[in-house]
Image 1 (cartoon, helix red, strand yellow):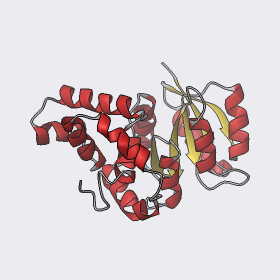
Image 2 (spheres, rainbow, N blue to C red):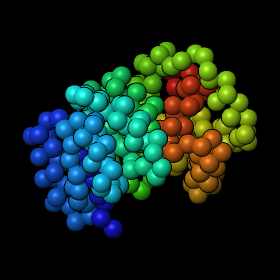
Image 3 (cartoon, helix red, strand yellow):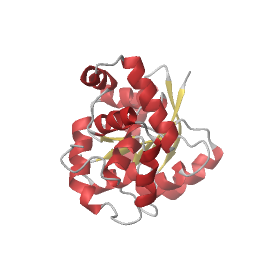
Image 4 (spheres, rainbow, N blue to C red):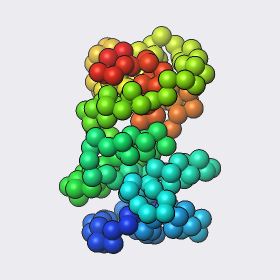
Length: 223
């Protein structure tokens, strides 16, 4: 199955570089390009796309608002934010807007390709250590009001599911969570799936953001 990718960046040279890397892959195809958010939304109305590589700083409509509009549509493509700095408020806002992860623009080609494949298969791609540093830095910016309804959602979880959610939010992989809780990896995967379903979340990134928003995990990465 070919992964249909859209490149959104106002730097033509950067798009050209990414296109060359992706074109060399048998399982990927660049089906659309855009130089700003407005153009990206127009292209998406006419083109079937699986994964969007989204620059955050663009004219007309930035990547965060573009991501928010894309992710609020029915059956949206996955969005992978591209940023210059790993501790970037734009990357943080992009995750809150619904992106499945973020990568640095100077990421080695192999890592970028792995990230696209992971996002396409439903995984979130944010290095756990980077996620923690990003959220630790920007958690104070999270709104302190309006989170009660979301906090109440956590009551739908069993004790074990809350335990798993805390460890997901701390950046542990399913294998690491399984070892910590003395469970099989398949059982952990089932728990994570139930957490996503019960809370109406798209992926692990949204689990992490919600854990911070509700105070289940505090800045510093500890529940």
